[in-house]
Amino acid sequence: MTGRHTPGPTGPTSGSTSTSTSTSTVTSASTVGPPSGPGPDSSAGPGPGPGPGGSPTRILLADDHALVRGGVRLILDAEPDLTVVAEAADGAEAVAMARSHAVDLAVLDISMPRRTGLQAARELSRLQPELRILILTMYDNEQYFFEALKAGASGYVLKSVADRDLVEACRAAVRDEPFICPGAETALIRTYLDHAEQGRPLPDKAVTEREEEILKLVAEGHSSKEIGDLLVISPKTVERHRANLLQKLGMRDRLELTRYAIRVGLIEP
Image (cartoon, rainbow, N blue to C red; front, side, top):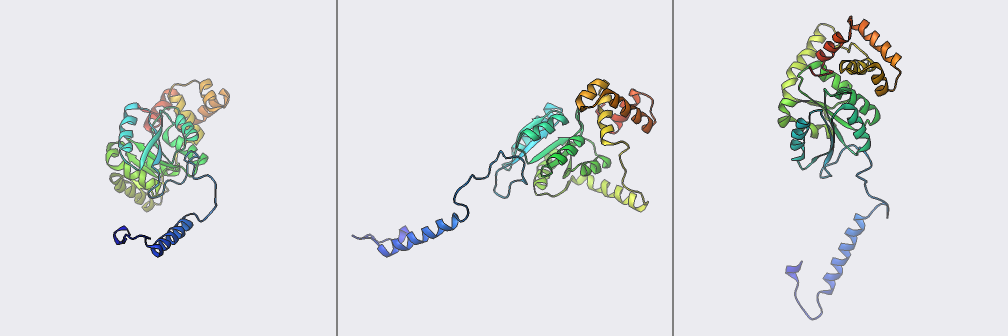
């Protein structure tokens, strides 16, 4: 220590030797392992999430309303351990952005053009199982919550309380823990217990994933050819799926399909 050093013509030779030996020992201990090689690459794609004291969690934010994205980004970027690195305006763009950017967490609005947040979540869960996903929505609906879990999401956050819950939901997702906003817990538990008490399973979807994709695009006003181009299938296949939808749902035309799509949250009214 500097405070104990006594100046002299020759200096404390034995103390210098001890200090040098100690420093050498610490240096050797800190370099155990491969002598060379690249360190962690932050651009290597989504990983399991940063550990304590690591770099900020990289977030993909998807919402079709620019003002909402801006507000949510302000909330997230204000936290030292969170940073928005990519934005998307619809579900299809969200999937593309997640594939082209290194992200740890995707925050997806449930109702977006082309693909909903749930549809994007299902595809991202298949393509990048290690990517954490949160669903952000204005709908306090237990069916959406269960669908979000089935799609691979870690949590479900209401936009009305995003300023209170979203940051903690992001941190929980990175820890690989589920998150339910406090206001929804009671309703969800009640729904589950009601179904269990009556011996009924949790409600299933009325349509398949492919039918849901086509239903959404039909309700948005796309033609069979446009839908075929978007989904890389033939117009005849689109027509066949649409006929199946009409029969399965007991409906007669595009207008009734559109009303149904609004009712189940595939598009906004």
